[in-house]
Image (cartoon, rainbow, N blue to C red; front, top):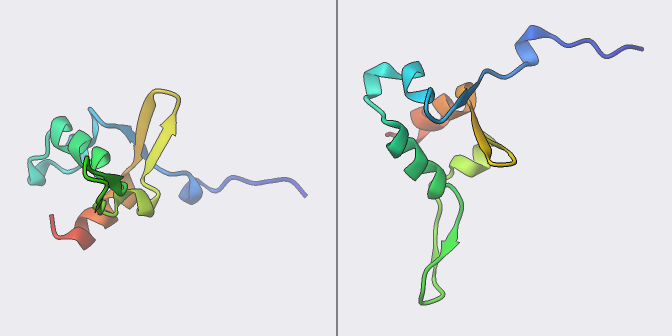
Length: 85
């Protein structure tokens, strides 16, 4: 049985720099998206306290390949709709 790739299962990926073009009405900048990616996971502050993440990492929208960061546009859009940004 051969694996068949359905066009609906292939995610639409974008670089951080090009992502604002998919959501022009929001006025996002690539710097704002970089900030969202930085805050996607929980992190520890200098006092050892946990700072909760914004939930973007849990959606699976961030794809890292070496130094390259790609964003799954559909998952990112769903996160935006759910987060109230």
